[in-house]
Structure formats: structure tokens, C-alpha cells
Length: 171
Image 1 (cartoon, rainbow, N blue to C red):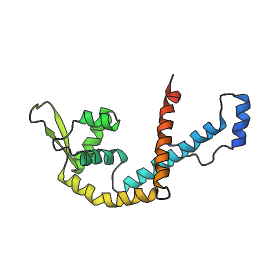
Image 2: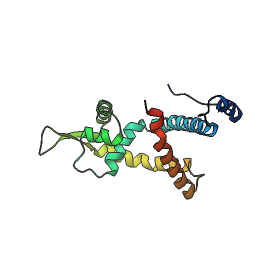
Image 3: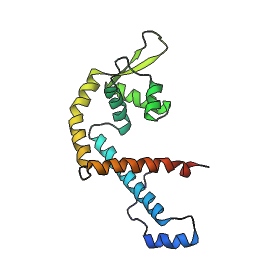
Image 4: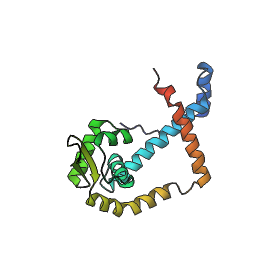
């Protein structure tokens, strides 16, 4: 279930909570809540965006990884799972769907028959080359209000946010 944060908490209400809970920093709380709202909305619009191509974000990521990494010899499913940050079980389902669509293929390694490699098929390459102009135009327009300098600042800020994630996931 995806939580849609339509109304942000009022800064004054957060300041009142900070009087009770000294570790509650209203600006930090509001920043996290705003970030969660933007991330949730981004996830929703990205899935809608990839839906127009009859793909999910995960399947698109696999195709792009195979397309941009120039993997003439293919890649093992486990290496692909590691690179994309998904479990091997999830990767199996994603690969099976892409094989059924004809976008990728499995081939035995010529040296070690125990190893299976995944490759982008001709159909997969053609499909990507058909949808990428629209995809790139839409993603570029989505951030067109930001200057290059603002994007670089955002990247730095996102790095800092990621560095603090361990505080939320620590026991």
C-alpha cells in the first residue's frame, strides 16, 4: 500500500511536539515528510509512465542495464540482481516476463554450461530504441524547471539524505 501524503503537518504543530520531545526537530520532520510525499508521488507517476510502454520500472531497468552496458556476452541473473538491488527470486520472475515478451533471451555460457547468461534480444533492442526518444523527452521535461546547478545541488543533498538512512533502519 502506498501512502499518499496530501496534507503536510503544520510547522507550529511540530514545534509544539518538540517542546514535549526534545529530539524532535521540526525542520527535520517536515523535510522527511515532504521527501516521502515527493518520493511516493514520483513512484506513482513513474509506474504510470512505464505502464504506457507496458513495462514496470524494474523491467525497464533490466532492459536498460543490458542495453547500456554493452554486454555482448550477457550477464548472469544473479549478477544482474545484485546490480539492480533485487532478490534473485524477484529477478527470476522479471526475467521470465521479459523472455515471454521476447525482449531478452537466456543462453548457456560456452565455457561453463552450468552458467546461464541473459542477453538483450534483437526485439528488445528495437523496442528500447522505439520508446527511448519519448522516455528521454518526458524525463527531461519533468526536471526542466531546474538548472544544471540546482540538479547538482539536489544530487549532493540526496547523497546526504542517503547517508542518514542508517539512523532510521538501525535496531
